[in-house]
Every structure is written in structure tokens, then in C-alpha cells.
Length: 424
Image (cartoon, rainbow, N blue to C red; front, top):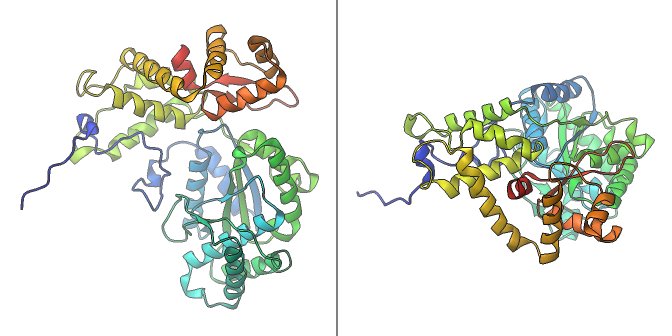
């Protein structure tokens, strides 16, 4: 039987099966990229695991800039905890701007129920599980039965979705008791505890983060302190600091946020080298599509945003395969002008004229130094409110990044790696 023709695969030029610059979550049940590809963060991982292993219940927060690797770290922590006898949810429990105590409690109960059912399907007929099922079912029906599937770790001990629901009237009365019964069931089923991952804080406004802090305070004694439950709260540094530090009751039970610093460039190189080896085509020696020297030169522009760096490497490789020397790593001299031209074209498509002018004024003035809302007000000659709106638009499109706040000092903003490639 004749084999079918196959479409060209540009990565075969580099002796690779697929792109090494993928963004999918490692260890996901929906993708083939194992957690063995996770590199670095050993100290931070040990810190989180030690806290879980040393406590009957724990509450930890992980902060850092967008794209720095918070979610991947938590996925690796959950995988190692499962190897040690804990049960963990496959995805995350998202926090939303319109949340109430009831809705978050319902989501926690649902995630706990799904985790247990995935880890030990045979105990689904247990009385505690039946009680939880009834409450979860009513809650899901009242909210239209909405489930959001989020890529996660997969494998034994993992549930596969995050539930978004508006709980019924009984959730505040019965929810905490049922969760306690479920956690007792975990321990009787030889589970060391359950790890739940709360996230999405970085997509909330300051007011909505304040509301999340109020919800955490309301749930502290009823839910967060339950024996056998381990909470990992993830978001940008300002968001997790606000959510866990606003109220004394919450601050006293959450450890100070573990703030991730940018990966050292050597770890970035090791991470990519591991991907090259994993994706080697037919046992051949893989060729790095982008030279290590080029990566070392680009990385500082991205302020530790590994996700955006990898996206830029993907863009550059796709632009230059067949143009740069075939089968050789792409150099900085080839990559930078190609990316500059490409990102300038995208800039014109994504931003309306006034926003383009404001970004260009910033890029042409002093792209290397941070700005505050006050300095941008002077640079752009607009009101404070107009500066806030412009920053929201530019940040949303990935051209500006807020830096972690230093106490009560004004927030500083920097140009993203893409902006530096445009104006540098």
C-alpha cells in the first residue's frame, strides 16, 4: 500500500519532529510533552513540597510576572506530590471578578470531588461522595452545567477539568461539612492529602482582587484550614500579595508569597536543549533552530518572560527557514531585523493610531528605562485617566509590562520584549 504524501515540515531541517518552542502545559493529558522536560526551579519546588509534606494542611502563594513559569512549577509540584501519595486536580480553580463566597466554595467542593473520583473511581458510591455529588449536581444544573477544560497534568490521581458554577442555597450550610467528610475519605483511602490550585488572579482588576481577598477571609476557618487540604494560590506578585495580605485573618495562615525570579539564562538554554533532544527526528543529532548566543542576547529584553521569549523564537524560526543558511542555527544578525519587521506589521494591525503614537513616543524617548503613570502623563501630554486607559490597552496587547510594586512606591512599567525588538 502506497504511503500518503506528507506536507513539508520546516522543523525537519533541524532534525526535529516538531517545534521545540511549544507553549502547551507539560504533562497534559491532551499533549505528548512530559514533565521530564521541566528544567530549573529546584529550590522553589523543594520549598513548596517541603511545606506540604510538613503540614496537615497548608496554604501557599506563588507570585511572579506573567510568563515566568508559575503554572509549570505548580504542575511539577503536583506531579511529585502524587508520587508521594497525595491526590491533585488536573487543572486549576479559576477566580473570577464576579465571584461570591458561594461560587468559590462550590468550585472548591467540585474540584475536590472530581479529584477523589479520578484517583479512586471505585469509592464513588461512598456516602460522603454521594452527598457531594448531589450538591455538585444541583449547583451545576443551576449554572447551566458549565465546565471549562483546562490542560493539566493527567495520569493517575488527576481530575481533568475546572468547574465554573453558581452554587445553590445549601452550599454555605453543607459545603464545608461535606468537604471535611471527603478529606476524611481521602485519608481512609490511603491518600496523604489533596492539593488544589487556585489561579487567574492576574486577570482581575485591583477591585476584583480585593473582593477575592474578602472571599478568602470568609472561607478561612470553614474550608481553607481543613485537615488534609493543601492550597496553592498562583498569580502575579502584586495580586497574590493583595489577596493574601489584605486581611490579618488570611495573612496569618498563608505563608509569604514565593516570588519567582527570572530563570538564569543557563537554565533557559538547558530547557531548550532538553526539548531538542526529546524531539530529535529518527535518532538524528538535533540542530538548535536559534543559536544559543542569539538566545542569550534576546533573553534580557523579555524581563524574565519565558513564554514571550519562546513565542519570539518560534516566530523567528518560521520567518527565516529557507532564507537563513539551511540546517544551521539562525543568528542574531538574521533574526533581529526579521522580527523587527514582523512585529512592526503586527503593531499596525493591533493598535489604533493614537496608541501606536503613544507607544512610539515611549520607544523613541528612552526604551530601556521604566516609566510611571506620572512620567507617561508628561511624555504623552494627556490626563491621568487617559494614561491608565492607554496602559491597560498596551499591556493587554503585550507591549508593556508592569513591574512588581516596591511598597507604596508608584508602579513602574517597562516595554516588553516585543516592544524592545521593535524599537531597539
